[in-house]
Length: 359
Image 1: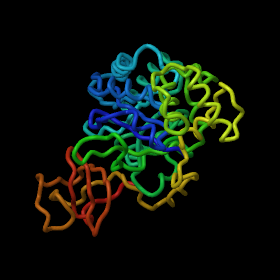
Image 2: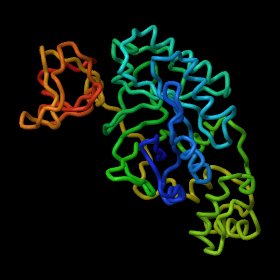
Image 3: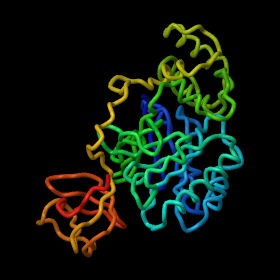
Image 4: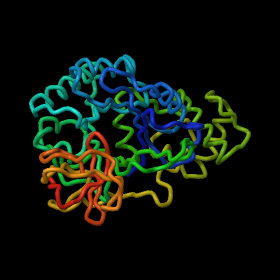
C-alpha cells in the first residue's frame, strides 16, 4: 500500500516542498462543488505540481444542478486536459442534504461520469462510503457503476465488505484526523488514504503520456533535486533545470542503491528515492471486516418520537440542537459507551438505544 492525502479549502500549507520529506505518494484536491470552483484548488494544484506527489482532482456532487452542468464546472476548474502526473478525475458522492430517489441519483451520477469521461478519455474514480451507497433512500446498493475504480471512505480499522458491485476498493480513506508536514492552522487536520496497490499500479493509473527519463520530468525535476540535495549533494540548486550536477548526483545515488547509473526512470526508483515505503508504513492489506459487523460510517434511522442531540456522549453533555424526529435518516460516525456520534445537517451525539442501523 501507498500513503496519500486529500485536501480542500479547509487545508492550507506553509510550504508544499515539505511534503517531499514525508512518505506520501499522492494527493487528491477538491476542484469543485455543485457549479463552483473550490477557492483553494489552483493554489493546491500549483503547489503540488513541483513535489514528488501524484495528484488528482475531485468534484463534490450536489443535486441542485444537473450532472452535466456540474461536470462542466469541474472541467472549467481543472482545464481542458490532464497533466502528465494527474490521476483520473474523482466524483465524490455523499451528499445527504437532498432527498431524491435512487433513479434520480443514478441519473446525476451517470451524466457527470459520461461528460468527464468523454472530455478526458479516462474512467473517473468514484468516492463514496458503504453507509451512503447501501442506504435504501440513496442508491440502494446499486451496481450500475462498478466498472469505475472505487475510493471508499471508512474511518475504521478495515475497509467495508463488498458493496455496489465492487469486490475491493482501489483507494481507502481511513481517517479524517491526520496531520502532515507543512499543514498550518489551529487544530488543523487532514484526510489520510491508502492506495491498495504497489507503486507500478499507481503510476499506471496516470492517463496522460509519461516520460521514462529524469531529465524530462518537467516540474517534478524540482522534487528530484530537493531529494538529491538532501541525500547526495547539498550544493544542488532546486531550480527545476536538469544539469550536470543533478545528473551526477542522480548517478551517485543510483549506484549506491544498486540501480544502473543512467537518466532512465521507473516508478520503483521513484519509490526508493523518496522513501515511499518508509519504516512503519503498511505494506499489506488489512483484512475486511466480517459481514454483519458495523463499519462506521453507517446509515441509521431514529426510532423514537424525539431524540435530543448533545455535544458529547452521555446525558450530562449539553444539548446542541432541537430533537430529531422519528424516521429521520442520520449517518452514524462512531459509537462510544452506548451513544452514537451522528451527522445530519450538523454533528452531535444521540442515545444508541433509539437509533437503528440500516444494513
